[in-house]
Image (cartoon, rainbow, N blue to C red; front, side, top):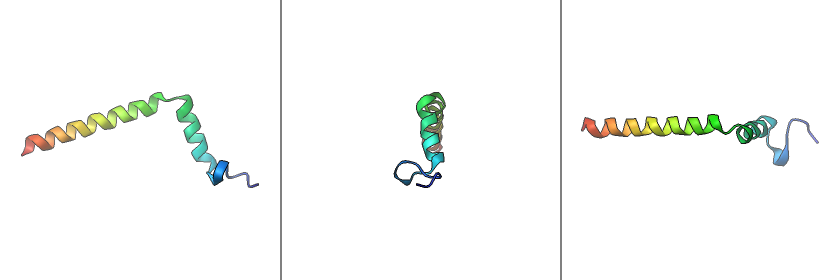
Length: 50
């Protein structure tokens, strides 16, 4: 078996990324909150521009 792939031919970096997110979910939650706030701000500015 090739050492560069993991379960179902997934690259190691993908597995490491999900493992990190599973162990430390705070950065992901902060990113989701920031994207939601940015989308809400953009929506409000676009709605008020009309």
